Length: 173
Image 1: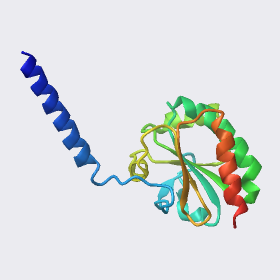
Image 2 (image 1 turned 45 degrees about the vertical axis):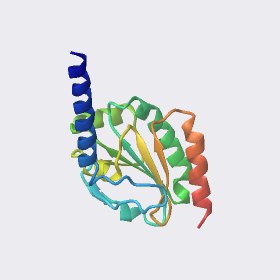
Image 3 (image 1 turned 180 degrees about the vertical axis):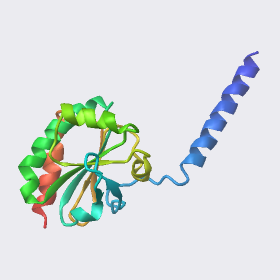
């Protein structure tokens, strides 16, 4: 009996390893110091095509989020304030929603309105490309399109470090 349990555990562990190896072949995580993968996505509310190239020359806070994400309810008001404060200094917040159902994201934005760009990636193509594994996951991209910082999750205390990094990047032209 004990031998059977051990065999099952070994089999399960081997299968899990092989599956993770199989599914990670294509998935190469975006890392700091690498160019941000270019994308074109529709805006959530107007369905207007927007691409990363439109923000060339600006510092971009690229945020992957979902309506069910509790930390996103904390981050959005703080990111909106940061956007208001720094938008005249070539700073943009671009939030990419991952909800399959558009109405859930729209409801979220009615409850927590923002004035920054909100896009939609309902099929998860770009969250897969960026290898988003937690909500929210954000990428701070410099004026040259290079990822300078990756941030997972969000608490209200995080905004200070985020603002410091963005201010540093805005200062270097």
